[in-house]
Each structure stands twice: as structure tokens, then as C-alpha cells.
Image 1 (cartoon, helix red, strand yellow):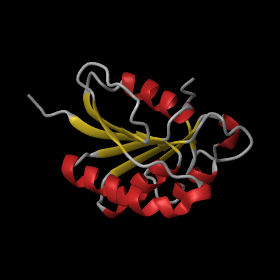
Image 2 (cartoon, rainbow, N blue to C red):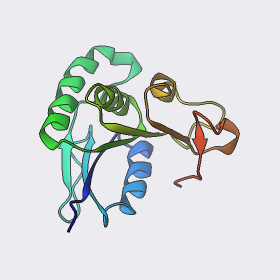
Image 3 (cartoon, rainbow, N blue to C red):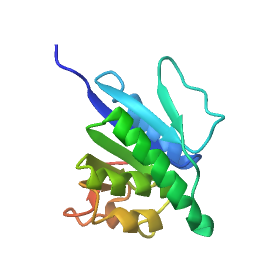
Length: 151
């Protein structure tokens, strides 16, 4: 029997989290999913492993440092083969640290960004191994791919 691929799934709360959990619902049968989000109120279902990390936004960039330490600790402890994020800032931190640790990374830009790629997406566009948009007109089918929407 082969070991399941471990996926580290991280996002901000709210719509990012809803999209991430919908993506991961289809992955849980074949992969081990380790979740992280900045919300201690989330209750895991079944045997889900969930970490809480500090929330970060454009208004409080100083929180990037403690967030990076938390995410780095989780990555070193869990040793995932893949990082999956739907955004925002905690996902950026995970993607950047993942690249430094040579972990495969997947970014799925939020469906809320209809007119252009999100600010977080722009930060990881050149760093993520796979960058997906949920809007066909935002795809260039080279660096930014469209494969459908989550919601």
C-alpha cells in the first residue's frame, strides 16, 4: 500500500476558507489533508488536522513575521508534499516558505476577483508551481491557468 500524499491547505477565513474546503473535500479520500487558518472557532469534522495561524492583512503587515514562524513550524513538523491555498496573506506566506523548502505549491485565486488577479495572487504568481484563476478571461493559459471554478 502506498502512502497518501500529504497536502497542506491554508487560507484566510471567510470566502477563501469556503473555497479551500470545497476543493479539499474531493481530495480527502486520496490524500492526507492538513489544514491551517486564522480562526480558532473552526471545529474540525471527522479526523481533520487543523492548525490555527495568526491572521494578516495589508493593514497589519507586521503580523507577517509571527505568521511566518507559525507556518514554518507547521511545514517542518508536517512535511507536506504539496501546499494548496486559495489566499490571502497566510497563503502567500505558505507559498513563499514552501518554495524555500522545495515543496510543490498550488495557488487558486479567489473567485471574488473578477476584474483582475488578487493582490495576494500577484505576490505569488511567479512563485507558485501552479497558479489557477476561476475566471477564464483572466487566464493566459501559460502562467495563469483556468480549469473551472470552485463555487
